[in-house]
Length: 147
Image (cartoon, rainbow, N blue to C red; front, side, top):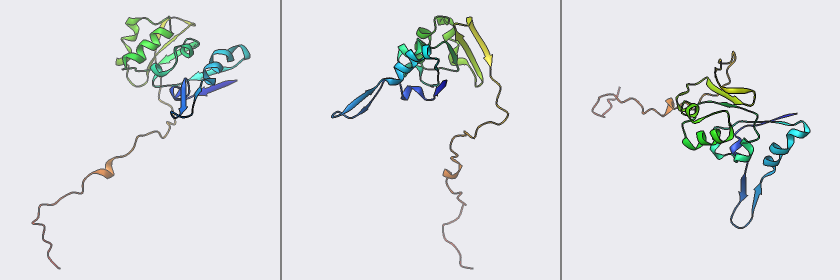
């Protein structure tokens, strides 16, 4: 069984509630760490690896790393993947969209790859701010003539 957890930094090592009643959600940590021996594969996706617990990342067999500009995120990847060194993590801020580095137990050295765009790309465009443009103004005295 494969379980995909997108935006994983929002699910691992999270406390919910307020100062009066809070609960620490750590079930995902245990599932990620113990599930392998029961045939469970967890696919973790996040844009913020620095926000994931180091114990979760240490259980990852393969990592696909796209551009990471934040130093804390790069440091967490370097700590979690013994195959990547500081010189390779320095390349991460310069990766362009579609470029990634594969790191894992099956790769003796980090492997640089280019991921092709999908044939049918998802409709994931950001918001269109074109409607926010100010109405065009025409040079006039501000007085309208009656017709």
